[in-house]
Length: 514
Image: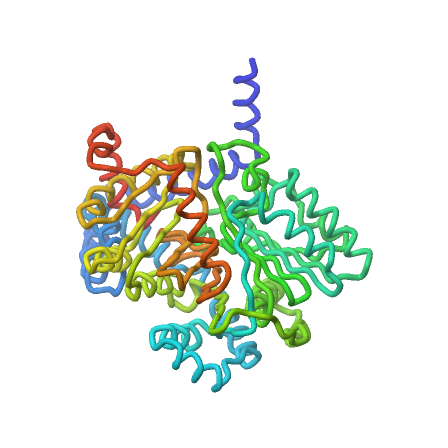
């Protein structure tokens, strides 16, 4: 009876109805293209010719080879339908419509960011490699590297949560919150109580959550409910029951900014599994970083750029949200660079950051990621690092949240073992943390997964840290996690069922589209 009740609740849920409507739309379009091609020879001939031209275009494009294969295989099987789907999704019509406005916001706020000549010269003396990375991020990402900044790392969602609440309670001017997932439960309820109290005190509270990550699991019109409480709320790309390319691009960021003095980021979202109040896939391993000092302004601007993007007609005085300078006691020659990544500019900042670490490491690189569906360029970098003598250790989930993603990752295990990469699966649960650590000097933590969506399609964020307090803490946490994990060997790979291997091989062909 309980199972039947759950089934009925699922069938009549808003999520199920929306997904069903989208699937029906896809089937209808596929039927139209197929039927027309079957009935009218001319249509079939035209579509086949277009398919051939499309194949030439794909082969000669600058896309990652995996993207090309993912489209060429179905193009060989069903040219008319694949050609239609390619033009529909690849042209990113929805993204093109908003691109101009987004670029306008970036240009208007760029002068508010500073990368002083004195700091450039100081960094150049410290490290030529660091100087080149900082220059790239400033010129193509629009975010400066900062001094007079500190970082503190927390190795789980439940560890960072009390510190977030503490800073929220201390807010005097404004609170900015931007997350992919925001769900009702203990974590959000406790945050919400603080936000309502702060609104009553006159604090400017603003919340952004993603339309796909949150909206299907929140009550209908939840943003209006928050607005009634005095919390300014915006939904990024509200999810609708219509087939649209807008669903491809999500706001996957995780940001909390308080008074422009303190910021948090990491892999965690605002939902109870991230603080292990509920058990979904065993123990949920995540992480986060607390930033103080000058570097917080990068996150402030990052949030306000998204806020202005979602409020087309409402101007915002971004400079007024910059905190008064505070002189902190920081490590000598320590630097922090919070960055945002966007599909708008066609510059894969998150991917470039990870590849830069792999290419410049001398001793070791430790990587935590929930998914391993890397592009060809990333795989080239990890091969180069391992073959050049760098110790590469990769931590992955033992219990996945998406089984098909683990199948794809497993399809790469042997090739990684062959070049000396050490692979580990966290046996107690799910690894959701996204982190890179190298040579006791460099670390990155944030929202960027090692997959195509994070690299190319989503709005992401992260923080690059050089010689800061958090680097050592992240290394210690990672090595502690290895003790709770199983090292993958050739014997382990042999035990993977043939069906799983086959499915992984097939899925790997289409990994760029998943």
